[in-house]
Length: 562
Image (cartoon, rainbow, N blue to C red):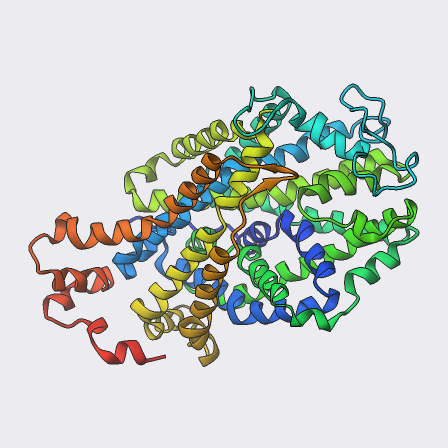
């Protein structure tokens, strides 16, 4: 058995986890949710769900990978019937890669466009502008719905060229400018990942720390702007009455589920390269806390600039406050363009977006590569070739997202690839470990690694609280499902069907693999169904016990113990 490679330094691992977990959503989603859902009061449900579900699941994935030293599929040697969920999370990570890299390409396009005397999204006199374009200065009433700002038109008409497409059934060819940016991103990813954690662990020294430097610089600039303090007040103004609204709690729960990066197989893959005795408990607490603090901190950076915009154009803050790509590719560049030395500010801002995105993309790819290499051992010798294969395949599929109508494909993928399926994946993972493998066994494993058992709090969360929370979230995500839309564009029925097929394709791995394991697995054709079930839910290292008729899972004690 060859020795598994490990991180060069402990800090490589921590920075990789932080770099993966901290991405654009920390900047474009969390601050907006806070502002919309009762300011500082939003922190109550957010921190509550963080403590009962976010941290326990984060800790669980880190410990799982570190103890079993394999990727997302291989770790399920501890309960073979659940291996399907490993393939679920690997597929989700693969699907997300199909569109996530496109955001980084947009940032790169903007970065290249910022090396000019005057930024190209300031005026309406460019070739791409439409008659609707109007500077803020000209139109007294911004509520005039037919007007578009130069920054809005720059993003939609100059970068995306969405005006040349009538919808998802009219994509056109990939645009060469965005395709070149995408190619650069893919090359960066390849050379970050090709040698495994030895290379990626060094890249994150830059990509995980750079956003903090830039955020701090932007904050120092932001708070000196007129109106900034009003923006920050609006971000934090506490309204506890909002906590009576169920939607606020659901948004906080959703934010926790998606912002920590649990359920992509990435934390499992990263921690599988740790030394066996590494203190993964401390790591889980540190990294998940840093992730939340980053979200909170970036709110000050965002809202100081939004307050400035709102005062400058004399409009209400909620006219300029928005989330998602519109914030970082329209509103923020627009604010930056009004500063002295705007080009330099734009360059550092888009470098920040690039570094926020690239290490999260690296994490997702690492999950796919580690997950499959550990599962199909013959790939081990050809890691570099296999990495090349994955990045090229990702590039080719991403080309759909850089066509004229690419934003429609992007929106569809973003809506379906990792929504319900991620929640489902984590739910099955939690059940597999806490119930089938057993919280007591899992705690023994952790004790073997770090020298002490997890406290009763963690064991109760793993066994009862987190699974209930996740089950609730899966139900909510089905119940509150809205078909995707882009502005006023509604997707045709076939596109929604395609989206559901994508979402289901990862989830069906769980039942499909379980059926395969019980009915068709060649190695165990000789036994009765009961015996096969016993094999399927017992760790592979204990199959000799099954032969003697000792099956832990067939005793009541196994299910009751915490």
